[in-house]
Length: 414
Image 1 (cartoon, one colour):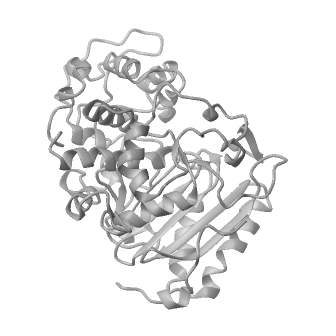
Image 2: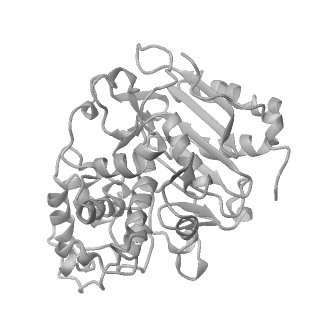
Image 3: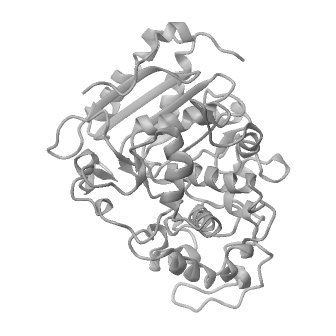
C-alpha cells in the first residue's frame, strides 16, 4: 500500500536523516521483537511537511501487516477535538468560559462536595458546591473524576455506574443525570483531576449546537480538514481496517481484548464520548495537528482563530502552577513536573523540570491505548504516534520518542 505521506528530505528541514532513521529500529528492537507492542505507526513533520514515517507490526492476532490506513481507537486524543469544538462556540458568543455550567446543564444545579461515606456506606450529605464553570470542565478542575483513577470512594461509584465507558451503556441525558447525583471530589477550581469532564463538555456542545457530537465534528472540524476516516466508532466497510486492541500483562505479551473486525465499535453507540470515543487514522490526526501548528488553519480552512488557540495552549492552572502542585490524579496522559494545563491540552512550561527534551509552550496529549501526539510551535514540529495497548502508562515510549525526535534535530530555532 502506498504511504499516506510524501516525506520531504529531512535535511532540508533541519533534521539529521541518519538520526531520524534510528527510530524505527529502536521500536523494532525494544517493543515489537519482544511483543511488548503489537504494532507502531509514527509520523514526524516540520512546518507541516512530513519528514519521517514508519509503520511496523500487524493489524492484530493472525492478521496482515499493519496497513498504512489502519484505524485506531484514539481514546483521549478525542479530548482536544472536543475542546476545539467548544471553543468554536465560545468564538460565536453562544457560551463563555466563565459562565456557569447550569446555563446548559440545569441538572448540575445542586452539586455537592464529598463529605464522607461510600464503599458500601451511603454518601454523607456534603456541602453545596460553588457554581461549576465551563472553564472548570475544559481544564479538568471541575471536581469530577474517572473510575479508572481507582483512588477514592467516588472513583468506585463511577466504576459501578460504568461512567468511564458510557458509549454503549447510557444516553447523554442519562450520563448527566447520574453525574448530577454523585458528589464532587473537591470544589470546582480547587484542584486538578483527570476526569469525565470532557465528556460533559461534549454534551454541552450537543445542547448548544443542537447537533449530535459526531455530526458537529464532521461539519465543523473533520469535513473542513479533510479528515475522512475519523468518527465515533467504525463505519460500514471499515471493519477490516480497525486494529485489534490489547491490554498489558506483567511478564507476558499483551492480551487481545477487542478484535478489530468484530469490535463493538462497529455498531452504533448510544453516546458520543467527547472524552474518548473517536477512532481514526494517523493521516487524519496529522491533519489535525497540522491545523494546530498552523494557528488554527490548514489548506485555507480556518477552524479556530489564532488568538483563541493561543488562549487554549496557555497554562490556566492558578498562579502559573504546574501539575505537581495541583494534580490529585493517579492517572492522566501527561507527566506532572514542569507541565501546565490549558483549555484541552497539557503544555510544557519548564523544560528543565520535565527532564525531557522539549520546548516551552509545546502542547500535547495522548490516549489510553498508548497513542500520543505533540505540537511544538517554536520548532515547528508535530508528531503523531499510534499503537494499541492499554494502559498508556505501561511503557516510557512517549518520553523515548520525544528524545529520539529531538536528538535528530540539527537546526534548532531556539
